[in-house]
Image 1 (cartoon, one colour):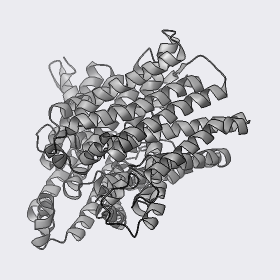
Image 2 (cartoon, chains in turn yellow, red):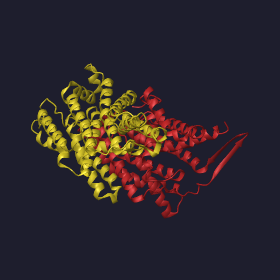
Image 3 (cartoon, each protein chain N blue to C red):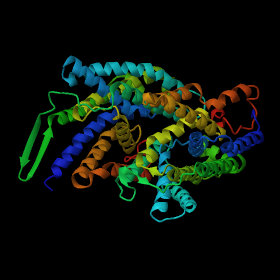
Image 4 (cartoon, each protein chain N blue to C red):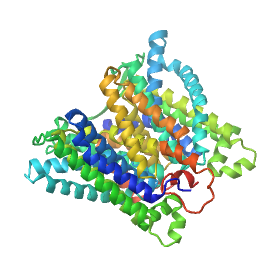
Length: 328
Length: 294
């Protein structure tokens, strides 16, 4: 029933990754390189979001908190403690993981809707904290040292996100961990009966979702040289990650990548040519979410899968992709 | 200490507003099991409708509440089939998808409101806006603005009316049956689809009326949605989701926490404290402070 076999999809991913590595050799315009860097960052955010939303079945409306925490941790360590960038970035990832642990322990015991609300509340509290605290610069934000090398940031971002993709691929598609998560998602009680510990698994997944997000945040902080609570801890970050994941296909690894590239491409074109209609963006984003839920429950990837898998619906092996849709 | 009675009273009056925000929302969760992320946006739309109707007709906004209710109940009737379709879908996790759907809806409404209503904040003119009562006993004193007192009266009436509706009518019986056991209610002849439809319409209408009230007491702005959504969520989670009887207590608690913070502690940290308390309560008791949520 898997229309494209797992191995072939891995090969496609490796080819796409290789093409991304070679991209700066073809694209010399720094504007487009910047666009590509940010598109890759969104791929990372969407992947992180999908680990907890698609694979584990928990909507995290506070995803932006991890991004912002990674941003601020990296920026603060670089600017106040004068750590070198990569060390600060790694520390940002660790801080993200620890905050995921702290946020996850109480919230992951909650059921679906409670979780969405609780994480949103936590993220708003983190944003409020960043606005009020002195060491973050409050609403004025803070600057990081300038390093104007677009190729450097392109490759760092690509490295972080590429590593994330392949690590997630291994953990969620190859190792038993992915199957365990899906078992918890489908039926927590049965998973317990099988000897799994749902809370542990969910916390691990939450941490796994936070680390790439925090790392992307850390690179972002050094890259854009200026961060403030609205741009790094605002709701819009989660909103967009959610659209990307839903639009691309929840519960897959390729879905968020495709969704992130399409939605970010749309956003770039929109801001470049239609910026006079700024608020329209919110309307289109919202309409896209609502319409995807009704018409594309498996995302754009689901369209091709559904058409091609029509014959072999009864096969016992579940596909990695479009799994969320097929398991009732 | 002189400020304590005033702080408590303000908290109660604020809590009354939160009851209005959360009561229909809790009811709809109890039956339909959907979290409507657009709850704050209905409030915002209702407030703007009240604002423009008041300017147009020059009538006291409280008298316009039935008109607002009818408009938004109609909107709810038109919208509910979409949500029903998502909820009864067999793809993935329907309740999660319904959550995402209302979330998209909220974004869309916010964008539309910013386009058509602009970014400025307004206030709905009312005859009660300026009146206030002053009481003093020794060194203690309280001031009640009449419009906020009216908000409390409105909250009490709304709660009583909803209560009567649930206890005394066939519609209410159907709602309670559905909340208890969906399949069994269907077997007993409850038309789930129709009840859900009217319940959602009732919810959107009541929430929009609350918007008018908030527009009179506080202000109307196209960005007011998310804050009100958060407040509605807070109250409902604190009360235990779908546990209607817990709503007033949770709303008053939230109001009092907020006003105590405003008076005695740093007002900048109010929302942070509110979220911190929500976090702690969920940590200790995931089903709300009465352990009666679902």
